[in-house]
Each structure stands twice: as structure tokens, then as C-alpha cells.
Length: 172
Image (tube, rainbow, N blue to C red):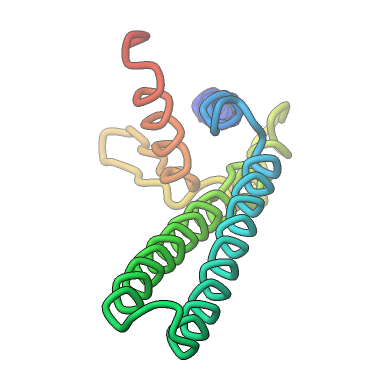
């Protein structure tokens, strides 16, 4: 059983390192998350500035209409055009905010407490009750003496493997 636990700990931590590497390599041209979020925030600020300019133009447009510089048809056309541009900019901001949310909400395996337990016991010499409780979900004992160990962290491990397969399909 100790060799099974040792082997699983090693494979989980290898998957964690692989996933971390994939995250770093595939994230927006190799940028780290903070740089990608900063870039997206700058794009949001740019879009907000664009909206302010368009709103100012709409205010001046109304002034031009009331002053008689443009007729009602021109006013309606320009106003509609500005409204469409504002809607597009607002939609772009929403999409950029979703991207930021996805980047920041994406669970990093390093932040997962269960993986910390695997790191803690990486070089264990003997099984302990504490280690078994932290690392295993359940142990099934079959009548023929066979054991089935269901480890915690299964979802994170599978996610790491799937992400690796998706990122490197020709490696498989």
C-alpha cells in the first residue's frame, strides 16, 4: 500500500508541475496571469475613454441640433451611429471583464489545500493515520485481499491530465 500511495503522490505532483507549465506557456502568448490581467484592464480603460468621447460627441451633437447647425435627420443618424458605437464598446468591456474573471477565477493547482497535503508527504518513509486521512477519500477492502484506494484530489489530477492532453495532442 505504501508504494501505491508513494506512486500516486508522485503522479499528482508531476501533473501539478505539468499543469503549471502549461498554464504559463499557453496563457496569452506566454504572459503570466498578472500581466494578462493588467493588459485587459488597460483595454477596458481605453474602451471607457472611447465611451466618454462618444458621450461628449452626443452632447455636442444635441447642441448642434438645437443651434440649427444640423437638421433633425442628421441628428438622428449621428445619434444612432454614436449609440451603436457606445453599445459595441460596452459589449467589448463586458467581454474583457469576463476574460479577467476567467483568468483570476481559474483555480490554480498551487492554491489547492489538498495538493499541499501531497507535497507535505512527498518523501514519506512510512504510512501514518494522519497522512491516510489527508490523502485518501476511502479505501475499499475486497474479500480476496485486494485493496482499492480512492485518493482525494482526483478532480484536480484529472483536470491536469485533460489540460495536458488538450495542449499537447501530438504528444499522446
